[in-house]
Image (cartoon, rainbow, N blue to C red):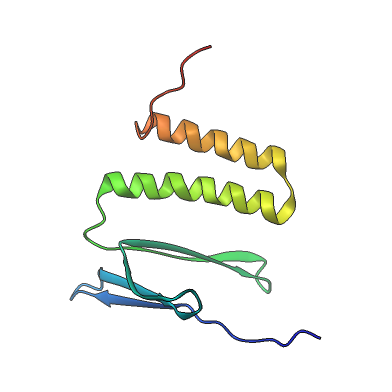
Length: 116
């Protein structure tokens, strides 16, 4: 029998006088991460009782628009990878990646693919 253990990821959010995040710091002791600063987070949690996704989206005042666009683009690609790994849905994961490419091209994050 495998012995269970607990692991912890800690998020610390500093807020300004208007409750806008001014600093996001996270720790993941099992991965030797301590006091790592981030400019944005998107945290999704599955609630089985509600059969719904709960989320926390936060970004600091220093998160510039161009970086937010990149963050969203990379998150789309990561969700495609997660879908593929967790369900084996190869075709739909590829469709999500294609949308990620489309998104990045439209926002000029990457150059459009050359017509072959």
